[in-house]
Amino acid sequence: MRSFWESIRVFWLRNDVLVVCSFLVVSLTVYHRLDNVNFFALPKFISCDSIPFKNNIKYFSGNVNYEAAVPNIVHYIRFGRDAKCFTSQQANGLLSVADNHAPFRVYIHTDNVASVQYNVDRLFAKRVQDLIEVRHYPQPNHIFGLNFSEVYRIRHAVDFTKLKLLRRYGGICLENNVRVFRNLRKFLNFEMTIVVRPRPNHEIPVELTDDVIIAHKDARFLNLWLKSYHEYNRDDAKHLNGDVMETVLKQGRHYVHIYQQDLPANMDADGDEFKNVSNSKKYFFVTTKDNTAQCL
Image (tube, rainbow, N blue to C red):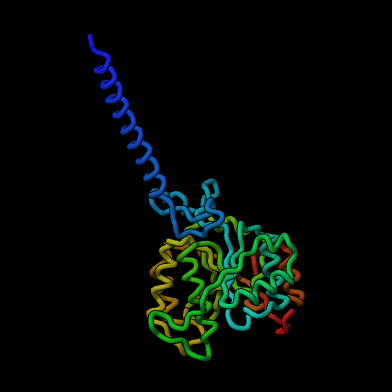
């Protein structure tokens, strides 16, 4: 028969083992959970962060029965003059996103937070203000060590920043004057969606645009697009022209969903064609022309 002290010693030994085992189980559980957390994701709306590619190939087929692969967040970029004011078409574009698409969040990335925040507070109702977060993003002055030209500096900086932001966060990146007519959620089920316009009587029959880009942050076509900037020509008004565009489309055709936009770019929002398009419920979006360059 055990003595009293021997019984106490056995009790403590057994409980020590139990405590150690419990600690190991809890530690392994926490490690497994943290291992799949992206600490560089946007701090708000973690639930709409991009789904990791690993073991989730089924998400990139466009099947709407699965959870969306791309986070339902919208990015705008405002550098230079756009950071200081909104035109009527730009304000209407942002309103159309809030009303017709209903994202979890709208991020405006700019090098002049004070001016953009002032205009957001002044121009939009509270329900829209609550969707918007203005974030500081310094305007880049070079691409892979190549300085921008003075002529196209803002345009090229915006184009390159779009890809960098999508590479970091994923989501929907829009030009400031894009008008959205229908919900874009169906495109969130693809790894990446790009928009092309037909180019009749050209050697390359389509033109790749960057007015609307929808992408998972690890999208393979997005990586190809970024790498194409190693062939950046600072004297071209648009980077994806000619051989560069043909090469990117040829290499990444099977990695991306292509949406062909039959409407012309820079459509007059006051014209009859725009009214017909907006009422047709056929088109998802259109890029409008800023008829008035004056700030609101």
